[in-house]
Image 1 (cartoon, rainbow, N blue to C red):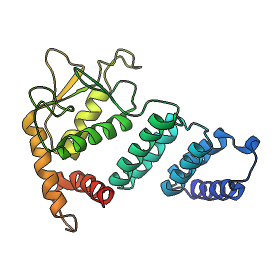
Image 2 (cartoon, rainbow, N blue to C red):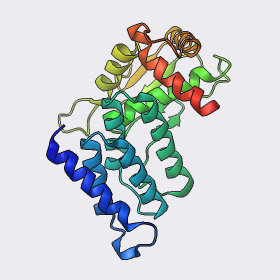
Image 3 (cartoon, rainbow, N blue to C red):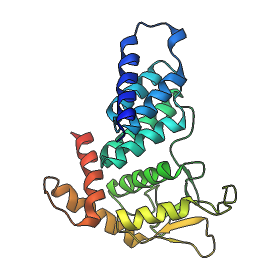
Length: 242
């Protein structure tokens, strides 16, 4: 961590906090908040950043997508995957309920799968984690589970990258790497449609089995490497359920 960044973040938080709830609307500058949030995240002070984000929503300043992404990236980089998922849900719910967040955060559900178009790499990975967790928490792996396709698989629409700077897909490789290296799951791009990522039914079941194992062993100090993310996600779920 650079000392200058940490000092800037500390000073920014102090100056913003001192304004309190009573400061005038003219001083509620979204750019000031956004720059402060960015400084906090660079200094790994995501707990301050989340408080400032909530203040922005309370003042209806509509935090932009960069604020949400910066906070999530800061949490993930410090190993707080459970907190990142919780914040992602919170931000998405604020977006849906009161339109305080000025962009789409959650993936859209279509007949072909979960559409990740328009999401950054970090938000797309977080969306996939959320969908996986919600799907496997559901009691039945059948066509009645709205997250799944009729064959019990999960589909994620990642696109072909035609609108990216390089003309190549960036979401597909990013999500694939996360599924394989973080969660130990084998997904693949469909031969008929390379813009669609498919996670087979048996891999979804494997994830559910590992989650159950992690849920029963939340206090273990050591877990198999492939279960670390499952452990974190289930810890989040267990704390939300209590």
